[in-house]
Amino acid sequence: MARGLKKHLKRLKAPHHWMLSKMGGIFAPKPSSGPHKERECIPIMLVLRNRLKYALTRRECLMIVMRRMVQVDHKVRTDMNYPLGFQDVVTLERTSENFRLLYDVKGRFVLHRISPERAQFKLLRVKRVSTGRKSVAGPNPFVNGKGSAVPYLVTHDGRTIRFPDPEIKADDTVKFNIKTGKITDFVKFEVGNLAMITAGANMGRVGVVKHREKHNGSHDIIHLTDRRGHTFATRGNNVFIIGKGEKALISLPKGSGIKLSILEERNRRMQKQKN
Image (cartoon, rainbow, N blue to C red; front, side, top):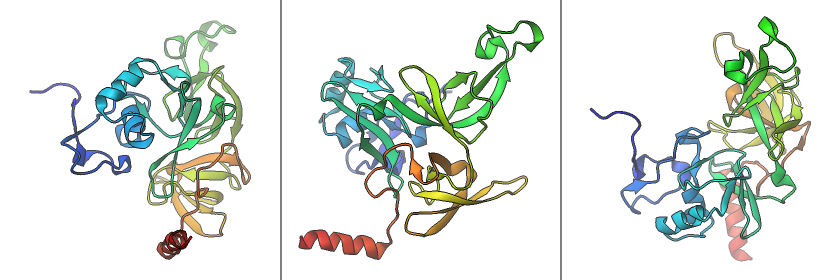
């Protein structure tokens, strides 16, 4: 019997948001084990070849990453199958470009170009807040004995950050300085704050949290309103807070997370053709 993880991925079974052509081959690049789930990430290779067009073949992608030209969150990555996920910062020093991975309103990854100043930080969603022994979170330099448990939090990209602000709870968002590894700010999961949807039918939409329905033993339902006044709802696990009030902490991609109807999209395309 086969043991361990599968080492291949058929193209037809690849996530649809990778936008791979059906007739382009048999296999697709299988993401390596990393901070993001296989169905919620995109390999570096597809970013270089299919999105940025800096390579034509798999071999050329390999040459680029092995020359240490690609950085993810300011760390050089030489694995072309390394998984990139939501809020990751991709830096290409040779071309002086910085990109943040976000979603468009159709649930596809967008390489949103950002300035070097904005590339110094990223937003992280808090998955869990807890305390651990030194075998889990390292020793506590301030306390010895039984009270030496270290408070820590775990984020959506697999980071463990020690000694966070006591006010930070699960589902909140922290502003994380990539260079220093410190939390510089945080936003509570509260009514009135700006959020982006990261899963479900409304993936990629941006709106202000208006109401939170609590259902014991089930998923909380969050009601949001976008800038045009349209309301939509989703599970609480799908909501990622990105700003205080209606002001976002990050720049948003084209469209600003506002979903258009089919007729509005059609009229916009026809207008472009006329012009």
